[in-house]
Length: 172
Image (tube, rainbow, N blue to C red; front, top):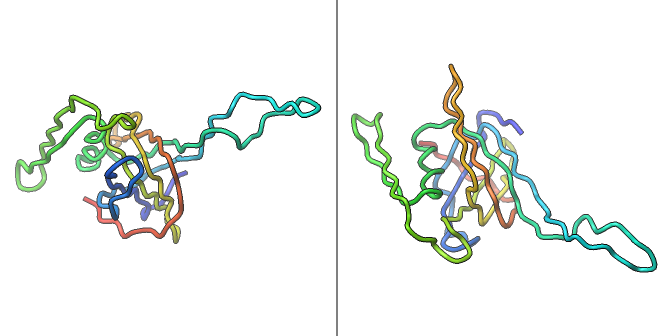
């Protein structure tokens, strides 16, 4: 769903899969978000004196969807770094030209997670925020359209979700 000017996506890298180390530290101004519950259904039939359809709520649960935002260098680095490897940022000239160096990793972090997992807060101009834990960026698309900013679509897979109070964002 599209959001207004006060919407934000807050992120913090987790110590281990779905273990939150603290408050969100990185924020992105959100344009759109579509994270929903997905259920991988069990392919079974119930035989109790007849054939019934499978239960609609039985199955493995996870959260998946996309977030869309403008591709300013600071936001782009926050998405590409956990996907590609370790990053460093240096100011090249007078605070308006940046150099981002991303060093690809040569091995997985753990057996259960190949890359850094994040806790993501989605705030959409309401009193509370949606909190997603154990999130990995599964796909990143860069869209270039004439007379428009660079649009980034990051696909997310998450383990758990909840609702909490929104933090105060600080944008780059």
